[in-house]
Image (cartoon, rainbow, N blue to C red; front, side):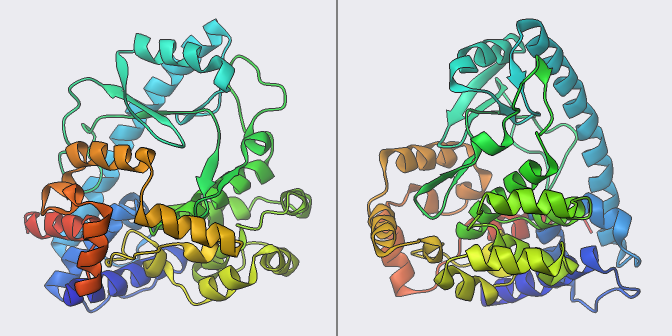
Length: 374
């Protein structure tokens, strides 16, 4: 597992650099590292981007993997756009506002939204703090590593836009909801609102070590289009959680905006969080992070009381967390290997105290990459 952790770090950091500043020559990696790079590209959602941006080809298996992933992504995008258009038309006829395929609706309109989604043959398979997940009945397990055109499409219905940081809920629904929603599809009210959504989602990923490189890439792309007035509107909301993901973007992509923006966002960030995140790289806070942590994201606590609550909830998970884990055990293929999904929190902690314990998702993706044809 130490070898896996090293390969994950090497390939993650290199590919992050390639997306921001493509190099002329391919890296000198072993066969195992090239396979791990496939797993990293899949976990971080960047295979299609790499197929377009890389200036070198690499070994044949690598090139073919990226090419196939780009084709699957394009085919899947057509299916999503078709579904989005149909849903938008149906919502418009019922005069219910929404944002995008991750549907955002008010709590008062949620029942109408559910009725419309069910009319497409979708059913609610799961719900969590942030969303209700709808998918077609009998949806098969994902067919391959990364994207596949035939994989099922899930629709997530949100009644609010929020993240747990690390346990307190940070809700920005009032910032991203349209001021005067019209029937059907609605855009974000401003570029600043979209940036707030992307940065908050990335912050949640950092706290729970599930950040994906594609999220940083999206932020970097959007940042190019923000004007000084957009940035000022964003800063006026005093987003204390924005600097850590913004700092990661700047580490890999360069300045995301005027220097004054970064300085202002940094000043809003709590001191402990600021010091901790200044030492973290993408691998430390992403799907590439191999090792289980007993208190992931505790640096996001803004008071001693909040930290104590977070510790208590980690030791004794809530009914909601236990329900999420039970659902994941039956649906997440990464939990099919080993007994991790069925362990209680106490047994997980005891195991981690005895020895460094890997999280199930990175090894699952590495195994899948190793099983791919040459």
